[in-house]
View (cartoon, rainbow, N blue to C red):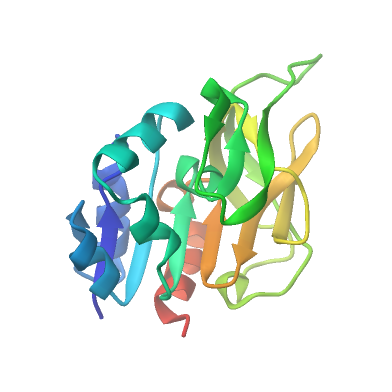
Length: 197
């Protein structure tokens, strides 16, 4: 199986690639549109700001490439956020694959922003990506903006307010957390992604 990880300018690529290699894959880190189109699976990672990531994908001429992908695609953290229409971060226009706008999380008593650390998710819609996970699995989060809960939401999380933690629109899926840093539950989710038809 061929697996392409899109070079979106994120800083966590080595941990993502290491987690995938532990599952027996040999991912290719690439900004080449043809390599991405021909891969059997594609991961869009991301650490940083929405505006900078969208600018980089635009400079690499990858926006329409990504929007047109037909194979299973997984967005991780900022990569998930980029699947939506817009983000309040940098007032960025995103890929527009999933309806909705990312909003800044609001700090309050006992609620720090960024949301950083372990938290549970609650499944609201069954999907092969979540197969075999416990009812409320723990995952590791690092983010300041969150996605709205909507028709695409597969699982939610709560940090001062509820938000979409796992999403799906057709062949595009996304996880707000970092599965590569999320121990057994994260490894299971990545393994599930590698098996999705």
